[in-house]
Each structure stands twice: as structure tokens, then as C-alpha cells.
Length: 177
Image 1 (cartoon, rainbow, N blue to C red):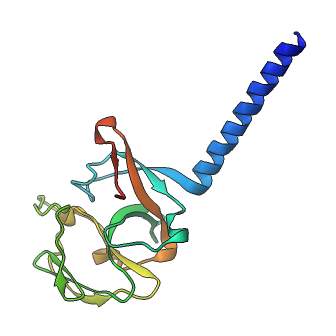
Image 2: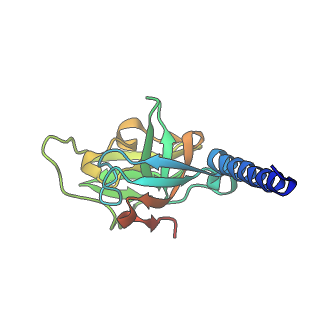
């Protein structure tokens, strides 16, 4: 092999190593793929979508109302739900409507119809979201295990915010705008 060929191969290998290293850093520290399982976030997600979760966003900002987050549970599972309440908020559910700090929320993203055999928690007495916690709900209220069942989640359990639906291609959508 000539010097030029060796140098070209060396440059390509170096470029590939740099690219692989960058991809590893991006995957480990910035963004992670997450596959949606189940119907708890329908119609926003119908199940089997592949999302990109921003792992850094909450290192520089706080979760906000309406953010769709991935978080760890005590059952060693990851859930994906929508942020409804932040620390200090008073949350209640009356007749299927969510009331935050005395005001009924307009929630155009939720699925109100019920499914045979599902348990629906249409009423929940007012609760105050503790410091360092979030109150989260699935968009498909009749088929979601969320803060109505597991209580407010610790902010420290939040993995990140779902920013983009990348698959299937027809479902592609940027979520955080």
C-alpha cells in the first residue's frame, strides 16, 4: 500500500472514530430514543411510536405545564405522561375534568371516551403537589396509570422531555413548540 492510500485510510478511520464518539456522547448525555408502549397517551401517541427524549432540558429549566415527560417509577418501569401540576399546585378531578388551582383546564389533547373493562377515576379529591414533585396524567384518562394511582412523581425521577416523534415516518412531529 502506498503512503497516500495509508494516509487516506487513516483519515477515514479517524473521521469514523470521531463520528462514533460524538454519537455516543449525544446518545448518552443529550438525547435518547424511547418507544411508546400502550394507549395511555392516546390520541397524542397511539403506541409503538419512537420518540427522541431530551435528557438535558431539565438541567437548565424546570418542567412546565403540558410537557410530555418520561420518568422512572417505583416499579422499575419508565412511563410517559403529561405534566399537569407543579410544586404547590392544588389539583382535583371532578366529573372527569381536571381542576388546577381552582380553574378547570382546557385539555384539547385528551381522549374522553371510555373502554370496556377499564377503570376510570372520574373524581379525585383535591391534593397539593409536594415540593420537588410533579402531578402527571396520561392523555387517555380512561386507560392510564398516572398520578391518580401512583401519586405525584419526584422531579428527580424525570428522565427527560419528549421532543420529537421520529417513527413511524407518517407520525413525525416536533412536540415542544
